[in-house]
Length: 205
Length: 258
Image 1 (cartoon, rainbow over the protein chains, first blue to last red):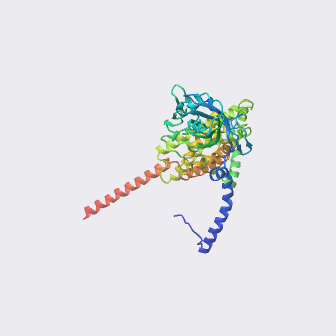
Image 2 (image 1 turned 90 degrees about the horizontal axis):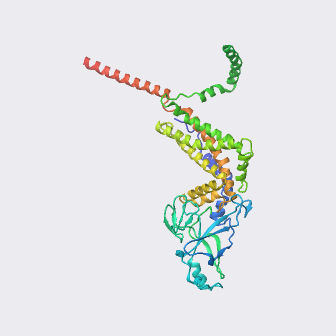
Image 3 (image 1 turned 120 degrees about the horizontal axis):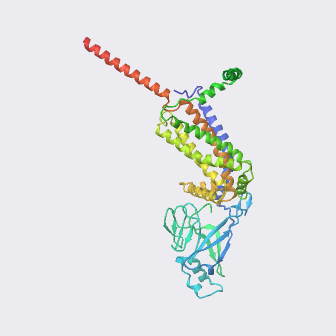
């Protein structure tokens, strides 16, 4: 048998040790833990982001083809630790591929009229509703998906996630469809995108 | 000739060994650490733990060497490894040992676990050693995963992204795990700094004392199924048989008297 207590402790001593022990423990553990959790606190609790809350221009609605997505390369300015807007992968920076397609791949009738001028508010609304602006990161484990023209689907190389042209989930392990960026269409038909997602949080991206 | 050299060597070494032993007890300690009875059956399988320890030590040593040149920043990490592989003398050898012994370590540690499982070496009183072993294998797995990401090439980067996404599926705290590993909400310089700290400081610092406890507990209880344990058990069995036989004999005796 292991002997647990050699000198009996009184209630007062026990209480004193408990109070002083908790205080010393708190002083020693809270600063390092909060120090390490700094980005977690700022992101999850205060809602801050490494990417400034700005609109970035993608391209024009006239560039989006029928029946397949157009891939845009967007360079998000990144402010994380020492280098704001600095490089991410070798000489690259926080560059993301943004997939833009029409709903079901059909070009809306407004554009077929050949109207190259400015759009009215109702036309902008219609165009916005007809667009899909998606992240190319698979909703399963974040691998980059690619458009397969002969299949008419997005396929993920890692575990076989399959998505429609609208980013809807067809099959495979992903729990949901492709992540959608917050976007808007301006009067001249320019598409603007923001580093913000309307259906779930993809992280990493 | 040989015997003369042997005698001369013993004459020099013996006093030094005795002197050290008297003051530190290091010779008995070495004997205690180096000699361990193992079962005759499957004796080579009992070297897997030592092989694991050897490979982990190799990781520590080559890892320290690699740190002389590795730079944990997003713009320099890949180039610093390229420099190790092309310009540094024996760079490919040192990095190759680190890389291949890490790969072999994963295999050997798995075999070590299988041997422990199939020989029943996790049973009382060795349960805690099994639990520590499981923690160790998890730490080594995370070490392998973070080492992969430190290269900051396409392969390592995407593997780490997958790892973070796996972590983000943790129930209730998934979002916190992701931002903790990323150092923000996107992958960037803070992410690599975190991977570096986890791989080079945090996990090795956790690994070392756990290996110490693992070895201490092994020495405390010995290898399961060692000759000593078998002979002790056999002796107990024979003693019990003798007592039973004697009891039977006495019973028979009483019967005959009555």
